[in-house]
Image 1 (cartoon, rainbow, N blue to C red):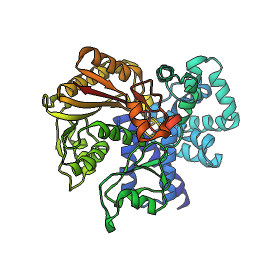
Image 2: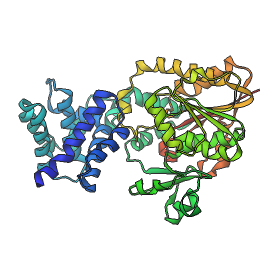
Image 3: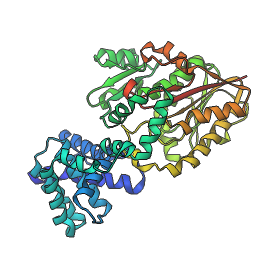
Length: 451
């Protein structure tokens, strides 16, 4: 019985990571489904599955470098390398006895690649003997600059370079290592208290969370922090799990949009921002259309909005929005996701620089459609969960050059008025949130108004 308790979480974590890599799925979406299916395991083992999988994926690049040091000239299969990384994460970043970490990892290897069990045992024992500091030193021996930071903080070199450029544009070049370090921290669970949504005993979401003495978020005026399991808190219909950066995106548009007008969320899945917008504008008589081209994600939007919402969800591409129809448009554009790698650690390994041009073209198409869908006087908020310059400021610059009828509003000034603690530089009109500074995903925000 004891052996099953030791092995099961590791097997689940390895299966989860293999599915993430093989299917291009996101771990934050797969993990809850897996844990719901494995309802027999203890809460402690649930936590172990989460740390094993998230932690191994976060530090995958560094563990890959260690494996290369320990297996010079050898070609190892991807599943084997992933399992060795799982073992190293237990050895170097978890309070698990070395003998258990090594034994259980080797037992896993026996199940999918029996002939490699001896090699796995030798690699992990040598890793334990060498120790973390020695392996890191050997891994960095021939590296310098961005390549050194890439291994030290477990990011691809091209991502380190792109983040460096984005920070420098914001006058924060010296904070590169702080950002990389914060990307590897386990994020807190952020909750949004939706305005106007009443729950049991006629309580607002904010009053409900305050009655439980939950800590207020530092970035969003409607944000709270859940330090335990958030599931029981979600029984209140106005409480949603949502990063505070995403909350600020919706709040910024709500601050400038005509609340009794017609609104569009162009890329609405999975629906968190749509739910926040709908909760507010419905009180003023506004209407919301939600476009989402993927049926599964469109259903997630419907669930996020809830059964009482009058918002309309369309399985539709944002490029097909009606011309001159909307007072306010949210374009939370598809992006590289490199501002949310704390919550989606696989993103940093999945995206390749050669994929960016196609993604940038899609963003341009959507922004063009968003501008064309606006009535005179309407506003579009363009956001990404990426700070990369080609996806952010460059897109806004091109749009303004092409559309002289559009003007850029100062979103930094606006957000500072909503929360002075943000301390955003008001000389810059677009907003770039930073994980190491604001404790949010690195969201980009720009607000354009049509003459």
